[in-house]
Image 1: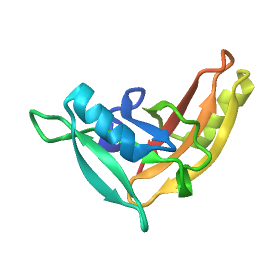
Image 2: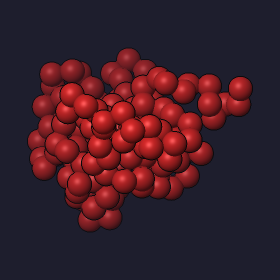
Image 3: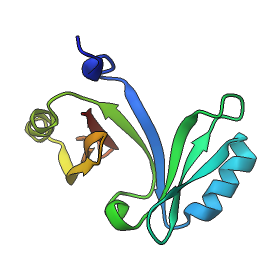
Length: 128
């Protein structure tokens, strides 16, 4: 199996999309002990939240703006998949919905946001 597919089925990332990323960055820094680094998005910043012990990114806190404007305000898990178009078809066939169609993430891959038949929401992510 190639490196691209070695983690298929695992949770590859988690982030929070919100209207108040700056405030929540501070909140989670205090509550979870996370450090943070700015992720420049033009005229505003999103944030990578970093492990206090290793400094590695463990989550993101994003503004509900730009490419994130249609993402529900919640903690979102990103499940790694292969053949995202096929997974979207299966989602629909099994009674799920696509809430946000496929979007490219420059240099990383592509993702979409789905809702399962029980109304739970998650994202599917296909690595490049």
